[in-house]
Length: 130
Image 1 (spheres, rainbow, N blue to C red):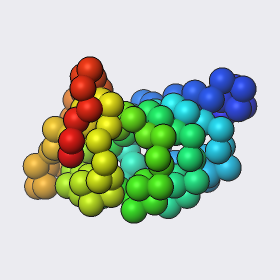
Image 2 (cartoon, rainbow, N blue to C red):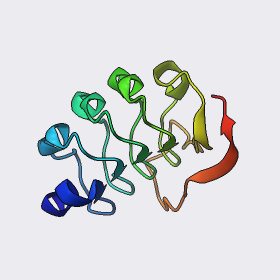
Image 3 (tube, helix red, strand yellow):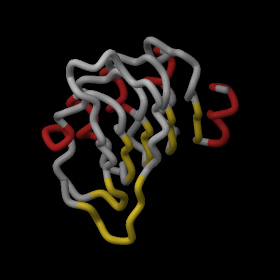
């Protein structure tokens, strides 16, 4: 998958029960779309901020509690989905309008984790202000 992504700029690593993102992702600076949805991630790698061409990031259905500040460096990011996670700090990290609504349906903090992460990105034709 990762080899193919080098030529397509699109990488889908969803539903693989990943507990951490592969460290090689930090070097895949040509990626424009990345899905890490429906895994077991508790945190993202700080190097995600190096993926400067990233336009779409799907994180829904993970055990994430926060997003790294390095996400703020992704100036091409137009779509972010963090539904069915514990994320509470989206506006601290990304403080600009995106073309698609940031779907942040959250799990209760005392929940045991995502049970049926089937959320999708909610697109709109207008920019959504965080």
